[in-house]
Length: 408
Image 1 (cartoon, one colour):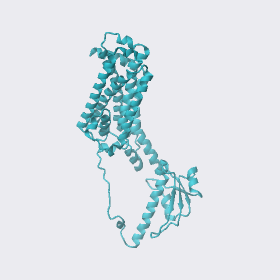
Image 2 (tube, rainbow, N blue to C red):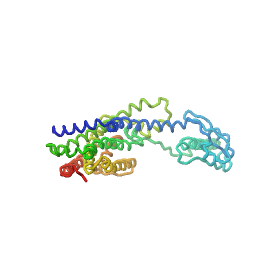
Image 3 (cartoon, rainbow, N blue to C red):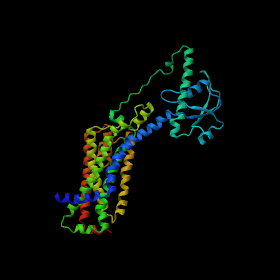
Image 4 (cartoon, helix red, strand yellow):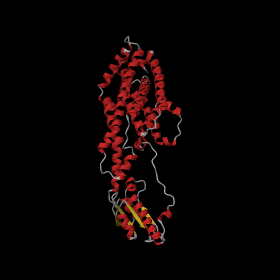
């Protein structure tokens, strides 16, 4: 064991001299995770919520009823109204950017219920700024105007407005506190965690194998009396510790998300801004048990990724070639992690948690959502450990071959 640690220490010292590795292992996860879990939701909340407090310009072709004009232009505590201006070509005005949206009266609009008219709304469909700003305000104003006309007519007939909605439907959020706070971007957390582990382990794994072969020091290392299995386990230990450092700072970044969110969230946030931040996970908070589960998962994932990287790097003649072999691993992480955003549609069985790395992603997602169970966690850890052991055996056999120093 002392010999393995001696080899690992030498490899770690070499890694510590590489500033790029240190930045990708420590600074990047520590800064980027809070940036995306806190900064991105705050930015989106500011952009979407800011549209409510901005007065957009809406072009008009035709004559709008005075009450509807008032409904469009009036301010409320939640949002400002729009500014109306006459245009001749609504499509061209929107395309040129003269107005944020435009209205065209196709047929005379009624000022009392019982009659109907047609009003066209022109805006760039799919444009988030228009959707959350001018177009959204116009739809709300027209809906309020229609409701007011119907309300007046019902009052004249001495009828209750409840006749239009005999069944009142209210929504109650049945999510637990963790699931409600995780938001729509919860699937990004396992993606970031495994990506940072991969980034932290790559430099150490490639440099300790393909890098030494490229520098011509591999042959001298193998000529030492130290058993090759000891050399390999030392390199595996160093690579895993480097990956674990990235994992630890990733988990630290997650734990800092909630305090940072409390510090940065504006006190006078509007309802729209709060809703946007909540939807995108801006209030993500994890307890000690959740952080421990993520750290355990990250540990076994780091061991597995390190063993896989060392095995692949043993086939490469240079660091560049090793990086070529390793590049597809990014897709093996990104693709399953991206599919996690559709996890609610997928009926996954218990055994999927035993699939290496995939089970880790599901465990992290369940942890963030407050839905983790002990059997699923244990299955995930076991799957990673078994795969790590198998890859270590393969790497040991490759390392024991005479031609390993002269890979061609």
